[in-house]
Length: 173
Image (cartoon, rainbow, N blue to C red; front, side):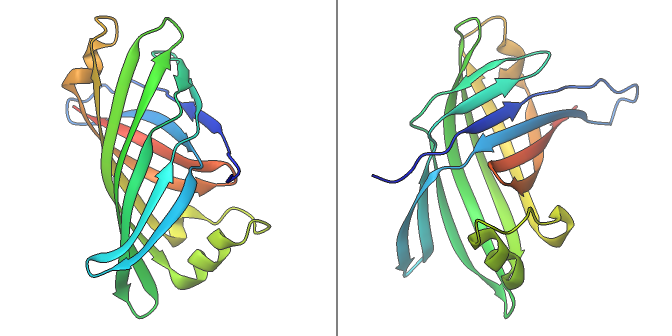
């Protein structure tokens, strides 16, 4: 049985006075149990199972339910950099019992020397300016309280940490 790791998700929104700026949200996703499917004719495929986590913030608190996942595909962007795509889904249960589905696509560009550091569990966190990790999450819920999530588009800037991935998510206004 592969080991499981859980982490936290923080959600923090801040208001902006201008009409075209973004609200900022922090989202940290647990490290999934990773399964390498291998190099298919369409690219290097991986599947990561989300084992759980927590959601924290002024507008939303709760847990990430186990069972979500990230279907990713990787390839080479250049001689010294890998490129990847994401197709991820998870379900959150808020502290008041509402269920929220999160799905996102995304893209990463990671130089080979940074990939080597990511593969080394004893290596310190890598400065996020050394790689590119972006997501485009959307939310879906039947909850009236959290219905505002159904009407937003967002983009996220990711950062790899010792416990998983932290995304700073910007609501597009």
